[in-house]
Image (cartoon, rainbow, N blue to C red; front, side, top):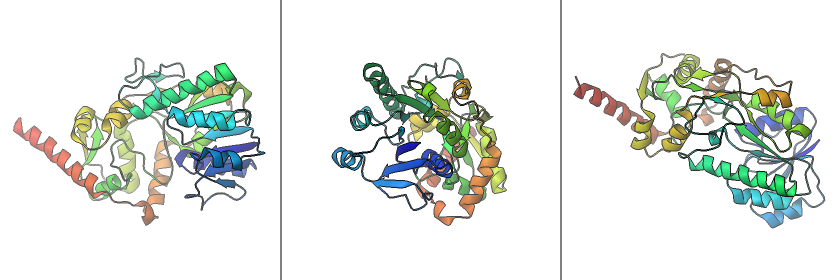
Length: 337
């Protein structure tokens, strides 16, 4: 199989790149080259900015692909560019959308690919929905061989998966745990959530590549494991070897109180209970099984981050904001006693 990834070094795509390289796929990555140092042996790099359409068209001259996947498209105009570049040049075009595009709030917590797409809280999700609609039109009207893939919360060894964090990653929350400081959990922590290790996501994604039954289809790829946010934070604290000091705060309050986009990230996503039905994926990829249990995956992630100081990026602004939120909640409770 000859495949081209636009991007290829992010949380989701890096695991797919690694597994395809191990399988001997003829894989090309089209990116600007800023994060290619750790690429597996045998992966070909086409160094360019995908937004420079003329340059990319020139570099792709003479290439035909079995699969092209765009991991970094977020707006319809970017897919209009992809259609111009790859119509007639690939047997399958995979677009990475988002499970946050599903109906929010949900009328049924169980999500299938037939769940309506609607998210009034998050522009990111609405843009993904618009991208999907554009591709469906191209499939129906022009025969463009699309497959739409919807990840949910996918993580790797470089970042601890969380519900509430700042703009510089997850380390500051881990640091607060290590220091015994209060950690904010949105809501009462009992809503249901699904997290998927990127190595498991990769197995499902690779099974869709070159799969004739996936053409024209939309498929989400997640673990079958469902946990509460309280369980998630307890798992993280246990991996760090500390006792969790949790403070529960309304998602609506957090969305109103901060400079952070919790309207989108919480009200439009993580504040809602979700349980994914992966039946469609398993029909298309019968061998798919997510095998990394969350507590096992998070322990690996925590171990990796603690061993690599470069991943321990502090976020003093977020730390101060957390202190102010906790103080505000404490003062509000005291005022009522």
